[in-house]
Each structure stands twice: as structure tokens, then as C-alpha cells.
Image (tube, rainbow, N blue to C red; front, side, top):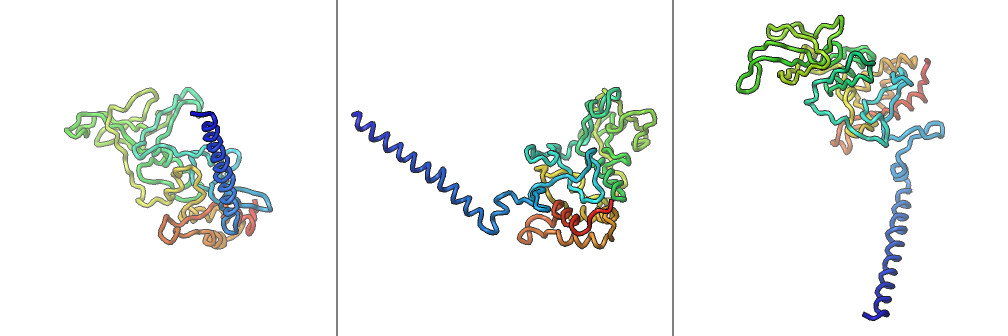
Amino acid sequence: MKISSIIRQHWAALRALLVLTVILGIGYPLVIWLVAQLPGLSGKANGSIIEADGKPVGSSLIGQSFTDASGNALPQYFQSRPSAAGYDPMATSAGNLGPESVVDTLGDPSLPAGDNGAKFSLLTSVCSRSKAIGEREGVDGLRPFCTGGGVGAVLSVFGPRDAYGHVVHPTRVVSVNEPCTTFSTPFVDDFEGVRVECAKFGENYGAGQIVPIRGDAPADPAVPSDAVTASGSGLDPHISPAYAALQVNRVAKARGVSPDQIRAVVADHTEGRTLGFFGEPRVNVLELNLALDERYPATR
């Protein structure tokens, strides 16, 4: 092949590269950006930023916590749902625990809490959150398959089994999520005539049949499910109207107004289903709290 032909081919390729770079690398992104800045589109394109007193305080698309430095709920604010990501947009994640996560890993009692290797199951996480929210909001936080102490009500039952793997004559029963302490007693005294033991650190109860105990909690707990479970992204900015309604009295007391006044603001910030049938009604927590700060500043 002649040198002149090689040069012509390379020159044509270079021109094509330059033209496509200008069109696709500069022109197209610029056009899309200009379209995104049109009225009605610019807010969403720029992150749906919410401002208060002229300063950005968050995004309507990303949730955030309303707690003090110790992680305690600020009484004047509606609380968001739990987040496995700590509402960090750079660490969006789910808890990766499913419905079969019902058995805790007990911590070493000789080590301080937080450093003892304890790991809570999804069930115990839900139970402990429900108990804490019930105490905070002044309602019964008990829910099915939870003990009164806020852990999963789960037994490991030992004994001979039938053809389906079910224990038919229990010989030993352990409450696997309740570690033994000086004054501890299991959430039930006995199971099918066998005394229930508390769990001991270092023992493996996996050989027993795992039996969750429903208890006598109502089928429809006072604490709604979104109050005790994290979203898939960990960044959900919304809560259900039921969870918002549960918090009204506390917020009203902290702001020195009547619950009906708070309910009116909640109603104003309750969104319906998308297009009338997608999803569920929801309340944007950040927008609601900012509206309350503007209308009813906290008294304490």
C-alpha cells in the first residue's frame, strides 16, 4: 500500500474522530444540559435541592436523620425510617438480611458492648426498633414473634424428629436470642412441658429445630412496618402516613401546639400514589419538618 493512501485513510479517520467528538462529546451533552435547565426541569436535574433561608439543607430525593449527637430522636421533628446506609449517599445499601434471619450471634459478655462481636438478626432489629419507637411515641411496641424485651422470640428445640424433620418429643429448649445473665429469665417458662433455658455465649444451638414463637401481640401492630425496616437503598426520604400519624402527639407537644394543627401540616405534605395507582401514599420527612419549623418553631 502506498504511503499516500495510508495518510489519506488516517486523515479521514482523524477527521471522523474530531467531528464525532465535537458532536457526541461536547454538542450532545451541552444540548441535554440546556434542556434540563428549562423551567419545570431544572430543579430535578440539579438534584431536587431544598433550601431554607437561602441555604441548601438537603434533597427531596434523599432522606436524612433528625437526631442529636448521641443518635437520640429530636422530639420536635418527625423521624425518618431506619437506614442501613446511615443516610450516606456515598454508601447506599440495604441490610442484606432476609426473613430467615431470626437468630442472633451472642456477644462475649466479658467484652464491652459494641466490641463483643454480637450481631443482631433482622427479627431482633425489627423487635428492638419497635420497642424503642413504642416507648418514644407512647404506644405498645410489641409485635408478633418479638419478646417483651425487644428481641426475636425464637427457640431452639432439641429432641427426636419425625420424617419431616420436626421435633416430636422435646428434650431440651433454649431461647437463643436471650443470653444468660444474673437475673435473666426466658420470655416463656416452658415449651411442650420442657423448661426453657436462656442462651450461653459460645454454645452452638444450630442442631436444634428453630421455632419462632408468635406470642399474643396484635396482628396489626401499633408501630407500622416502615418504622422498623430500612429501605432497599437506605436513602428513602418518605415515611407512610401511618408512621407520620404515630408521631403527631410528640411533635405537637415539643412545638407547643395542638395535635390537630400538626395533622393539618402532615395532610398538606402527604403525597398520593404516583399517577393514581403506582406505589403508596407517602410523606416527605424533610419537607414536612421544614414546614413545621417555618409555621410552628419548637418551644424547647
